[in-house]
Image (cartoon, rainbow, N blue to C red; front, top):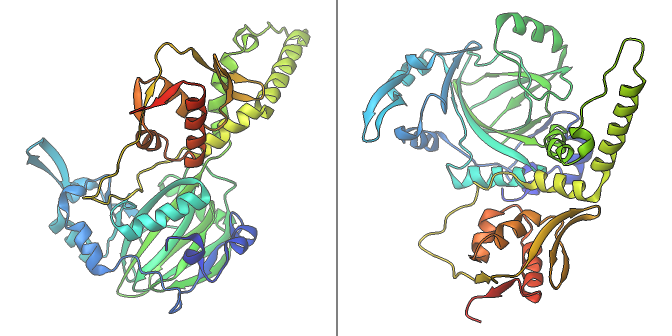
Amino acid sequence: MDSFSSLIAPITPEQFFSDYYGKKPLHVAATAETRRSLLDWPGLNALLSVSSAWTEARLKLFIEGRQIAPEHYCDRIQTIDGEQSRVNPRKVQVFLSMGASLVANLVETLTPELRAVARTLERELVGLTAANIYCSFGGRRAFNSHYDSHEVFAIHTEGEKVWNLYQGRADNPVVAPADHPDLQRSLDQQKGRLLQSVIMRPGDLLYIPRGQFHDALASSDASLHVTFSVEPRNGRVLLRLLEQECLNDSAFRAYLPRAEADDRAGLKTHLADLAERLKAMVTAPAFLSEVMEMQQAIRGELTEYDLPSTRPLTAYSVAPGQPAEIIRSVEGWILRTRAGVIPLDGVQKAAAWLIGRPAFTTEELSAWFPMTDPAQLNVLLQRLVRVGLIVPRGQ
């Protein structure tokens, strides 16, 4: 499942984004050709047996909509690095025998198969991606009806589970609802009528858009699935970018005019001026470039090792005494040098990083900026060589 097409087949990416993404749930039943093999019981047991990896933050237990307090299944133990809190497998097994569900969080890097799916979703939806494993037992519910503040892709791997999808949908939520009895009563009212019941079997995929109310219950003796959460950037990132941008403008650093009950004209005019300035900032080409860069600036943890192989390094020296200044112009970011101006849109942070060092390698540059298009970085290097700002080592 190294491609989005294979992940959602036989649905095409075009169908998914036009008809389902952000709009409505999608259940894709597995066939012999599309069976999604991701994690089986032996694989789960092997992961959980790496006991040093599981803390109360990464492994949680739930039963009938309530979380079991970590002190009931975690121990304080002495390690070579001092006292630590660790999950006690024997205590966990007792709760599982009582019908509790196990949730193993942040597992997207633990196996090649999990990494492949996470990397595919991260790349296709341009969002922060995480994976959780859910192990449940027949007839015992882990979570009450709820909605999530991110996109959900659930891949079923063992047993069967019934998912109930409801008509109710929260409006672009940015946080998940808190676990509280009074709030749950409100959520049960908001979820509305049953929209669809889906029986998930091994290899099935279920997509649930952000905010869609749902719940699930294992219908076999035991069930296992992996949920991938994907959270693309939303409009809040603009506020962080604009805050610094506004501080560079004297008009935003100035005091607001005093406003009296019978004289608000001065403040009204001032706010109108600031609004026009904000509009100019947001619509500037340079701001568009910064937003695109922030969209791409997501984690690079999903890269795999390929030891014992290593790669040759291509080294550069930064020419000493060469004046260079990175400037944000109306048309975008530029690098001003003695030899002329170099456009930097999309690579301004990479340019600032490399000219601030006496030497670097292209592999190091790619590692620091993994989400920047390698072709753009190569063009940047070629331009900096031409103006004499950097020099290939050995020349």
